[in-house]
Figure 1 (tube, rainbow, N blue to C red):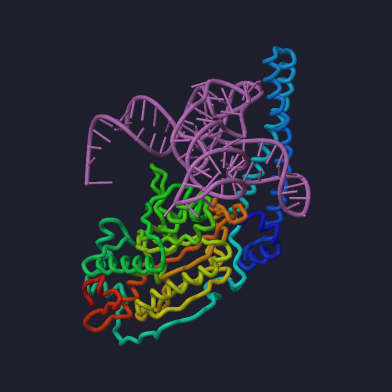
Figure 2 (figure 1 turned 90 degrees about the vertical axis):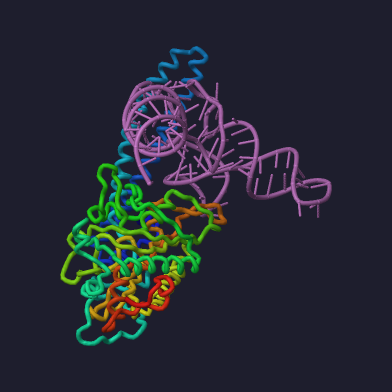
Length: 423
RNA sequence: AGAGAGUUGGGUGAGUGGCUGAAACCAACAGUUUGCUAAACUGUCGUACGGGUUAUACUGUACCGGGGGUUCGAAUCCCCCACUCUCUGCCA
């Protein structure tokens, strides 16, 4: 969530930022934050003063009792009791104000970075660059949901039988392609200086709040009720939360982690015409990169991560474009996001395969993820993450773009991982 | 899953109602001294939110797993929850 200090110090920028996101009644919301914060401060000052007085009296009672002056002690007790009632009142007021302030801040999205274009929807996203020629296929080319049947490598019907829609079963070369991609992505990240982690794929409520999935996207995560645990929608959640409630040294930065996990999304209400096949699933595999950086370095890191993901797409010989998301299309918690989209020649449209974001201090504030620098003062770090990469749409575009009349070519970089070069 | 024991500052660990934000030791940092791949001594050494200051200084409050309660006063007593360890059970 946003820092009150930022809202106070950079009021105009924050207001402009919220407007860039088309956030309704931004001025009112910000004014209310500042008013509540003022109230929080003044009520704390009052409460603390009374508490100090009360503490002093309590100490005096101790020494009075020791000296056997029970009369004075009793009088002091009465006085203390009266104070206590007042303190309780101020205490409740203070707690209530803090609660109101927090829930208000939870509703405010992150402020977009200056480079983020204004806009309302995906239409307004800015194409930064595109790379690679779009392959032209013959008439009779097949979309991936036909190809996987033709070559019997991914089976949706079997998935329906054992689980339900959106839980495919990968078979034979299909399964091996999954494994090859995961290993390829992890090895590439290791070479780039990321440390591999294998986090749990169920997380508790605190973790959900830490990265901002809660309370925002409550219904989008699978939930194990008896144990009160959520299935992760992305490895971002467990990996970033490794650093929840952590005070780092400036010298520890940047932290670069990579992890492979399955991801689970209920995708409630988001199924439509063009989400056939692998385009949208309830369970899918993803390799995720996460960075924690010094605030001065986060945008350089974002560019690095973007370049890194593009490198993966180049090695996989996939045509792609990079979009800078507009204010209206960005995720709630992000300050700037690049989406990488791969062109799928059979579906004849762009498929989002990666999203790389800088959250600045938005997540760090909730996570209480800070670092201590030269000046011995602690400050919030910046968090970033990106898919590198999500498998299903990569698989879909490899299958579709590389299809030939008698098989499907596999990208060269995968041959050694796969143990075969075509399907 | 059953029974028992625990959870204190970066670490070890003392502390059963006021003199404890917390002993002692270790680690870390700064300085002094002797000097050589180190020792001795001295000092500093938690976090958050307030007040205060140009900024320091200074100062208030809270925090001894989390939440609640008793009390003038709680690390210390009571209740609930989470987690850890040991034994039994089960099991990849």
